Each structure stands twice: as structure tokens, then as C-alpha cells.
Length: 245
Image 1 (cartoon, one colour):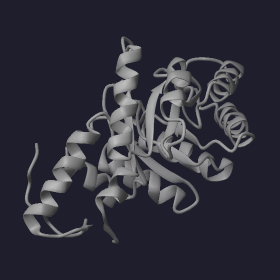
Image 2 (tube, rainbow, N blue to C red):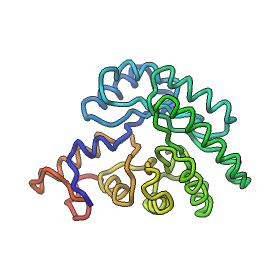
Image 3 (cartoon, one colour):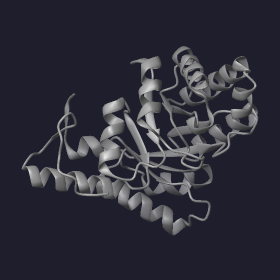
């Protein structure tokens, strides 16, 4: 495994505020903190796209809009419209939730059509597309089938969870998803990742991006680990002293 600097880790974080009662002031705070820590993206509800894009203008931090969030139970046409609307309002990354009903129906043609249309809508604007599986509701076979579809359709990422379901990201989920897609599609872990041990475990399992609201706590803990061990990089294969819970 490679060694990572603090900025390498920060650039793997989608810094998140998807609360339904998040105010404009909360969005400004989220963006200010993202700039301070140099996170890769702010993950926000679609309606917040414009305010966050304006706050982040002139930086290399992306505005990531969540589409059909958190249930995924809207039509393909609705998801495409919302995606294009978010991009029009400044979003330059998209995370959408798959239609779980059609997954449970075994309607894989529908799921593939949905993924194809959403990826096309994003890529027409050179915007990365992430597909949220919500694995807590899926069987292993369903997760594998979704990953197989993604391997064909080629979204930029497949993602474990919304963080609003009955469970969040697990190492087992990341490992399974990565085993199917390999290097064809990247994996994003999200949901319940609140400390540096969990963060490192997800990366070691194969995640290239981490969605979390605890980004500051995690980065500060990783900095503390480096200070204790007198290093400027972390090799995730070796143990480090715990500094957070």
C-alpha cells in the first residue's frame, strides 16, 4: 500500500452536511471548513447547489449534489431532471440513489437503464457520477449484481450508503464492491465513518473516496498520529497509536 500525506487523505473526503434543516449559514460554514482542510468535495442536498458553488468558486473543491436522496424512489426522468438542474446551479459532482424497489423486483434492465441515463447526463457535462447502493437493504447477491451493472455502465464511483438507512458503510461491503469492479470503477464508502481507524480501514479495503461529516475530527486525529510517530506520511498497513474514538 502507498504512504499518504495529510493532504492526500483530505482529498479523499467528501465533507458532508445532508441534514434537512441545514441553513445557509450551515452551508457557508461547511464550505469554509472544506477550504480550510482542502477536502475534495462538499456533499449537500441538491437544493443547496447554488449557494455552495458560489462559496467554493475559484477553489479546487467540488460541489456534490445528492439526487433522489435518501430513498431513491423517484422516476428516471425525475432523477435526470434533478441532475441537470443541480449541474445548472453549479454542482460538479453527482451522487444518486438507485431505485431499491426495482432492485428488489429483480428488474435489472430498469436499474441498468437508470444508471445509463444518469451517467450520461453527468458525463455530458464532464461531471463525475456516483451510484449509491444503500447496501444495508441489499443481499450480497444484489450488491454484486449492481456492481456488475456498474462495471458495464462505468459510473465514476459506486457508493455503499446514504448514511440515512439502517446501516452505514462496512469493510465487507467495500471489499465486495471492489472485488467486482476492480479498477474499472472506483468505490466510495459513506455512512457511519466517524474516526480515523474506520477511515483507514475503508481505504485499505479499496475505497478511493470517503463521505463523512467527521472529516475535521478524522484529519486532526491523523495529524496527531503523525506527530506521535514523528512521520510525515502514513502507511496504512502498519499500526499507529489510537488518538480518537
